[in-house]
Image 1 (tube, rainbow over the protein chains, first blue to last red):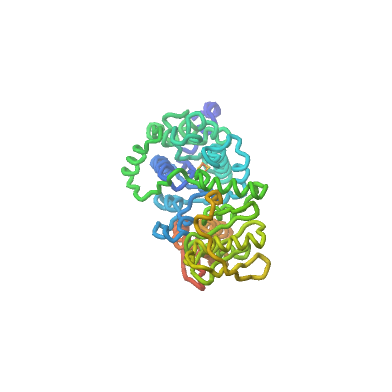
Image 2: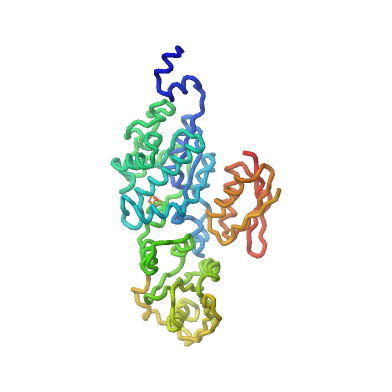
Amino acid sequence: MDACLLQCLNPQTQENLIHPMTQRKAVALISGGLDSMLAVKMIQQQGIHVEGINFFTGFCVEGHTHAIRNRDQARPKRNNALWVAEQLGIKLHIIDVIDEYKDVLLNPKHGYGKNMNPCLDCKGFMVKKAREWIEANDFDFIITGEVIGQRPMSQRKDTMPVIARESGADDRLLRPLCAQHLPETLPEREGWVDTSQLGAITGRSRHEQMALAEKWGFKDYATPAGGCCFLTDASYSRKLVDMWQHRGSREYSLDDIMLLKVGRHIRPNQRFKLIVARDAGETNYLKGYRGQFTHMAAISHGGPMTLIEGEPSSDDLELAARITARFGQGRNADRVTVEIHPIGGESMKLSIPPMPASEIAQEWYV
Amino acid sequence: MKYQLDATNLLCPMPVIRTQNRVAELAAGDTLEVHCTDPGVLHDIPAWCRINGHEVINQRREHGVIIITVKVSDD
Ligand code: SF4
């Protein structure tokens, strides 16, 4: 081709003409659900090399967190994002964003959804991180499994451009499942992918996704109810807000947010909260925190491990022991012996009457 | 070279993330012995290795701790 003519073309088209066989590379945001799986497949079918990226915020719904409880042991103990990557034959990069995510959760520019879920800011943040990743790793564009109209906050036709703009990804962000309804992106314009082979899915109905899953032989995929993280859960959000209010600070650690996923949380007064294991699986898990919390368990009968958070008085500890006994096998006994291990203090044994269920006020449950 | 990584008391996916980040610093042929307590790693670390071309060469339990040895490939 004439050198002058070549110079008139944009740099990407020049590159395509000079290196027509350049293998284009995309990174896909993998949540572990069906939509991102289908989006990757759609793009793989166009000869693009795809790798996955998965961000761990600490709030992600993980099979293993459920599996802490005995009754959930039968569920497959798998990480859905890894499972999806394996089905698709792609590499997966799991990135710990726990610290950076705090600012997204605490100061969302676009506010919260129904609960403490800052979905729009969250998506913008994840696409921004993916944009930084493609720039550092020499990839060409980003794909997500978003579908117009599927989620009330982050997956609307008017909010999708906000994510593309605020993340800095702009036209390097392609949503294959609904691309036919969206403005053309860089990979389409450059001819790396053919828009006519991409999707035109909209809305909350899952029929088209299920038909594609069937066509490509995807079975056993995860169908998380309510979203990909605990922040969409009303009970979890309530516990999070309660924790912040009683600490007078919205700081949190990974341990804090993991513990909100476990046990009954009971706050009899402003000074302290109990976290009472609901079964042996949770007791086992809470044992890992014995060094950090005042804790107690019945020794005369079987029963749960309880962690105490806050500054309980000695009367409070007795109350906590009575509540702990209520949830153990001695609940109908006259007295139960509970061993208490105050953090940094001498352990002690209390013989107490278990608290009747009717005396545990409903408003104590967080 | 042989290396060790303590991922006890961490719930998945943290042990996988720690493994991934440590393996990225190692050379092909090195081994990394990962110590964990979340049984989820029995599924996740082998899955991560299969995806990324590394090899699980040993898996055992000692006093309630799951120990998985990963051999690093040059992938
Ligand atoms: S559900 Fe959770 S992880 Fe998913 S976009 Fe909303 S805040 Fe982010």
